[in-house]
Length: 134
Length: 134
DNA sequence: CTCTGTGCAAAGCGTTTGCAAACGA
DNA sequence: TCGTTTGCAAACGCTTTGCACAGAG
Image (cartoon, rainbow over all chains, first blue to last red; front, side, top):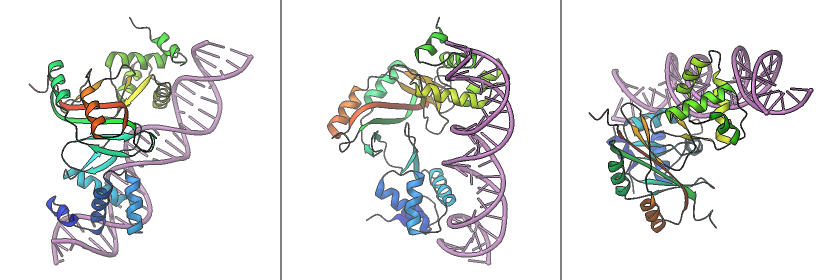
């Protein structure tokens, strides 16, 4: 069982019920946009404000605890920082899945074709998830 | 020499001086954000309005003549639609370059690891461009 | 001539900020 | 207790809309 409180402390973030709830939701759901998060938090804290969500998301991004994923033709989602991975995005239902891909082929090609020194990869693959492709 | 007028006609877009200028700038610069475009157009049409830029960008996206590229930690840029390619983004100066990569390795891995039916790839590699890495 | 595009100003919407009160350490 | 966070409301910035006039076909 994951201890959200200690997770926050490790990243120098004061522990508040709202923050714990944000981390818990992101941990359970993997990726969420601002509205999804707000709706989830509202059910636990009827008086939570959108400003609190924004302030916390930004604080967590600052601490490199959270990261924003910009999805083509859709809203950004947020996720807990973990080892580098790609995203699969369903163009039908919006479902997002993580996938661990070996990007070495991409990086090798890039180093032969260009003089850029690459240090981060951002790969988003779009298509239909198993449910929607039926 | 590229004929911007005919290019617009092919995509069922009425030819106006402002539209020609937008296409010309994007053709010459490859990728531009809204502000860059606005500044460039202002020098040709001192009374051009930001609303016109937005309306035209949206009309061109609708016709699948232009596409938006969402860059991590930065503003979106727009580019003329062409064959699929990846982007190299300099984290220092913001310079963006196109690169033709063979994504087959990525797609093969995805098909063995997941049941998603992928139909679009979005690859953005971050790092330092040749100038900034000196 | 008709319909679409332009420029302006206003409206809209998501995000950020300032502040007093509440809360965490 | 002291400094940080919360919730509210106002402010902000980017994008869209409505409208009258100009321009394209």
